[in-house]
Length: 581
Image 1 (cartoon, rainbow, N blue to C red):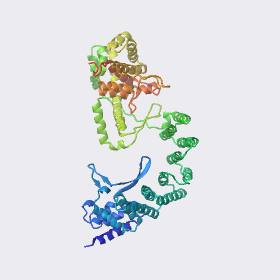
Image 2: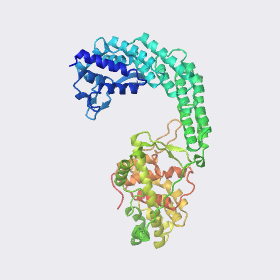
Image 3: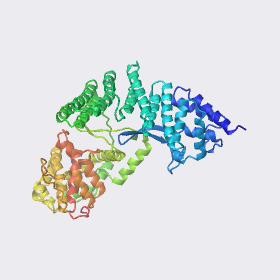
Image 4: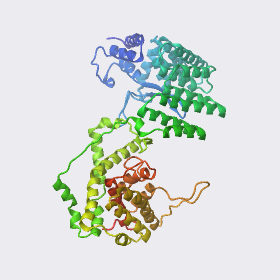
């Protein structure tokens, strides 16, 4: 049987042999292969009885990396795997058994390769074993020595970055100074090389710039890098580094102008949606600068885009419905008995154009399960003018966009049926006069004579074939009705003038949320929101029409907003009461 010292010698030899590999990945794989040569490769490490082998496998399984913490860099030592119940593999360094830590210590006395020593010394420092300060300095020295044995690249950069942070953690300025100068030399060599590897260079610069007082020559490196690297994304990173170091306001302004110009130049060399994305990025940078003139110029460039320039593909699909099925759907209009009951039936019988909220959520969840890959792609909504409107920033935003997509799909399917139902009312009962319609609408306690006549004219325009006129006149009335309901609930929502901002009511979405809180049916709330004013998607027809981005409103969308007007008109102003039956 091999003695414990013999086992330690054998493991140390395997570590030193693995350290000869050309990369971190190959070194870790070579070490694992060597240590598990006499047992199945899938053996759970915690079940291995040979303590030196177990200790070595755990030591090189930890993820050690540099992360940002409150705009400063720090080293993190994490287990390779965290389980849902708090278990970890390997165990957290603070929880490792003492006998394993003793093996790590014993290995530091036998291992000669800087790569192996850096890992073991670092873990002993992390565990606060023995003279921790000395282990930290030793680990920093070993990281520097290990890095210089590998070619410049991401592995070498990572070793130098970790070593620098370890040295700084114990205030070893001498060792940190040596590592920083190695980072500077590597950065210069990377710029002078034939192959362009901006990722390596920027990683080197991240570590250098994280220093409280970066060494001289950093600014020259950034200037040279801007000349070497022409990719706009890399230039963006370089200029942001320069902006963070600039001290005078004029210097900062000049750098912000350069940054905006980088994206404008990228747009000039691009076409279609890529060009639009670059111009949007230019505007985002200008807004970050808070320079009004720069913002106006960037916004003007973006606004000059036209939808035809984007090169977007258009997909259309059609569906057919049996004539008998259509007549079945329209039958309630014929059975209503008069046009008044038929108008009420638009919402009482057919329900919201966007569909039932619970069913929509279930469909969205089903789609997410069945088409998981589609959820990995980011989406951005464009307005009727072809300019970017909304991009989700969180999982909640993405869920809201998916729900709005489902609701919009339902509306597109249902809107033609609703348009036929509304037209059938005039076919069967004739077109009521404006006074008859106004008298009908004044039955609602919050509808005065002027509003009633405005609603009446909108319906008459639709029945006379002017669907666009009907939509344009009824859409502003939707907000009037909602606002009247909110005011009747004694909700103080008017905002008086503040400085240069005039007095105003909050937006339609905010007002609709108040109605929902006071008993408005959630499916109808979603219908009003998605059809009129949902930033996460949907028709958003109120804003698109008001700003002139929709040039032709046909009968289906006009029918949807007219149905919505009848539903909102029917709501009881008393808090927590539902719509009239």
